[in-house]
Length: 87
Image (cartoon, helix red, strand yellow):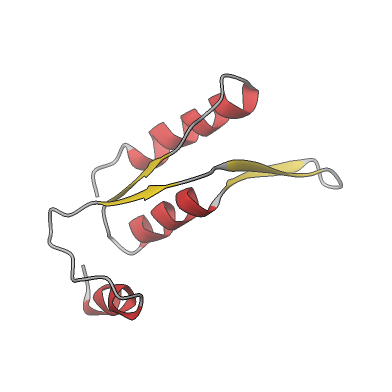
């Protein structure tokens, strides 16, 4: 983790992370659908935070419930692809 990444975490009051620490986010997830364009995207506060942390080189994971429907399968596919890499 770089100094700037550490500073980001200190701003929100978190202690410094060690190299083997993992930040776990827990919460909702969603599929945002934009009917006018036919596009959709994966969202939700907890998954967004986990992905942003990964982008800063912080190991993270997301815990949330995923349904057994087309949207749930899409979220599960994203989960496997986005969080399988050990960063």
